[in-house]
Picture 1 (cartoon, chains in turn cyan, orange):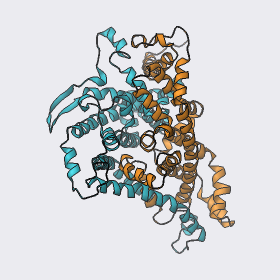
Picture 2: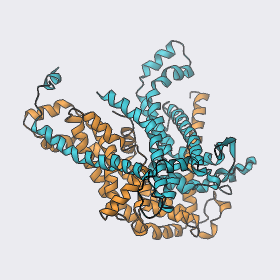
Picture 3: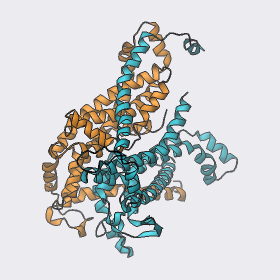
Length: 312
Length: 273
């Protein structure tokens, strides 16, 4: 009540309030210029003929976008992104939630397990890429164990497309090579969802589970009917955050495999980098960047919008 | 002694299985990087070295040391500046809310989700114009600016837990905007600073896209140098492994000694409070 009185509309904006706003303004302007201004500029470049070292800002319409959507490499990138994103998010959620539930059982040594499963989060995607490149190298690494079972996967060098069908100029289906990259990415990021789910599980009062057990629910039902629904907001956050990481992924793939034969492990992030900074196709690179931004925005904008409303 | 329940045993087996898988890359890094050169072969990747040999580290260190220092010069000022600005923004946006404050916050926050590819071409152009292209200060500027959304978010969430009544009573006592910040907020936000600093340190140290596009050879941070090392055909992979460990060491040490704060940062940056 006291607060409401102080926030009455008649209260004048104090001098201190203006000071507060003045302190925010530099950061806000930096964001306006460096984020929104530069995005606008990139959009402008993507509509130009700037495809060589010499700047050429003449208007090209959607030429660069049309080029990309007919481009073998970019079509492959979109396919790879779809499968990478689905597999990556699915595995990070299933493993993160499953392991969090196990760790939350008050077993001995839970902190040791937690620390081991979380540590890859502190590493760089570059380090992960450099190391997993060797672990999943077809002639070494895990294949030395798997040879006992008589299987020798080709990992990221495999050019097979599973369940493929013709789509544009590419074969659409699951590129087997992408699985190797997914494994490395899951190894690195599972800790993230694990930490989120652990925090979520701590927030579910034991009485709720106890009450369900009293009603005769089995342990499995308790998790399915009580715990899982309560973890739903966390799952939403994990999906959004993992989706935006996966849509803009670059370093891991660049360090681990590069684009691969027939672009089986290529992604828009790698294509954008190579075409812009190695090939000087600035307008094409800008168009790829804008498409990446739009893909990310599909996930992020509704998420930000809903949490902004929740703030009020 | 109570019988060991079978359910518990299965849970342990699953956890131990995953723990082994997760730790395996570290095992490979360690055994490979400690082997003498003549024992390094793809066929003996998993075997222990016959004798411990640090020559891989010596070689990796001689190649990475200058870039390692570049990373230090980058990460220290960038972390401090972005934390300080984030604290200020978070303070304004949580304790001095004005009409439209939430909208401004959302506008700032969007900046942490964008793919940086979408600002990279103008950014480089801009850095060339102000003569900061291919310099560490240029990278510092970039990391401070694009670090603003996350540090603002973290501090705003952190300050939400400081009761408004403390601020209100300080105002009644005549404390000013800056006075309250200095005498009430800062002393209460030591934990916040530790969490944000660790988060920013880890992210900036590990960052690659800005580093590889904004700097060349001499100015490059350690992650770019590591990538060059592994991309090079003539460098033995035991040296690559040693290099990977050296490059990862600072963030690993932070995780080992301050893991609790690292995880808090991870949660603070993802769950909107």
